[in-house]
Length: 327
Image (tube, rainbow, N blue to C red; front, side, top):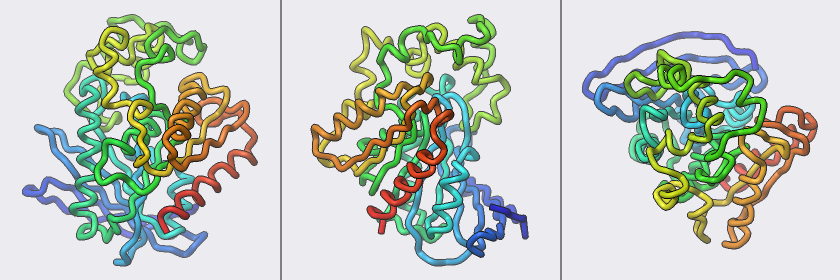
C-alpha cells in the first residue's frame, strides 16, 4: 500500500484531554481515502492513554476492528497494528481502532485489564459520534500479548465482542512456560543482571513503550531468564497464589457465551508455546464455542519459518471468519 500525507491537523481540547491528528492517505489499491485520528480515551493521573482510529474519510457508519498490540504486556504501542490486517480491513470497509494500555511492570495486570475494558466502554459510548462507528459490531484482533488480551476481551468485556482472532496468543498466565526459566536461545543470548533489568523500568507509568526511558525488551528477557514474568506483571506468586490470576486468564473463563474465535499459531513457537492455542481450542470444544485453530507447521513466533502460502491462506481465512460474523 502506497500512501502520501495530504494534510495534518492537530486539535487540543483541555476539557476532554484529547489530541486529534488527522492524516489523509491515498490507498492506491482500492482508491479509498483514509484518515488517522488519535484520541485520548482515558487519563490516569497525568498519563494520557490513547487510541488510533483508522477509517475511510467519510461519514458512513462502519463496523469496528479493535487491534490490541503485543509485547509481553511490557512493550509495544498502538502504532504496532498489523500492516496486513490494516490494509485488508480498511479496504473491506471497517474502522480500525488500535489501542494503547498501561504497560507492566510499572502498572500491574489488573490495571492493564481495566484499561482494555475502559477502551471498549469508550468505543461504545463515544464511537458513533466521534468516528461514525457501528458499535453493535466490534471484532477484536491482536498478536502475542495482544492475542492474550484479545482472548481476555472475550470474557472481561461487556457486552461481549462479536468475534475474536488471536494470533499466537495465550490464555494461561501461570504455566511453566512463563513461571520457570526459559531454555530457549531467543531469551538467553545476552545474560541480564537484576540491576540492569530493573534500571530499565524505574520510571513513571507508561502506556506507550516509545515513551519509556529504559529498554523494556531487556527487562522482558531478564524475566524469561529467571522465570519471573508472572510475578513481575502482577506481584503475585504463580505457584502459591495462582487463583489470583484466574479472573484474568481466558483458559479459566470460557463459557458457552464466549465469542466465536479463530486461533492462528506456529507449531515451533519458542516465545509463546503452540500448546497455548491448543489449550484454548480444547476449552472452546468442551463448551461448544465456535472456533477454528490454524496451525502453521514449523512456524516460530510470528509464524516466522512457516510456509508463506499457508500463512497467506491463514490470514485470508481469518478475514473471512471476521467478515462472516460481522456482516
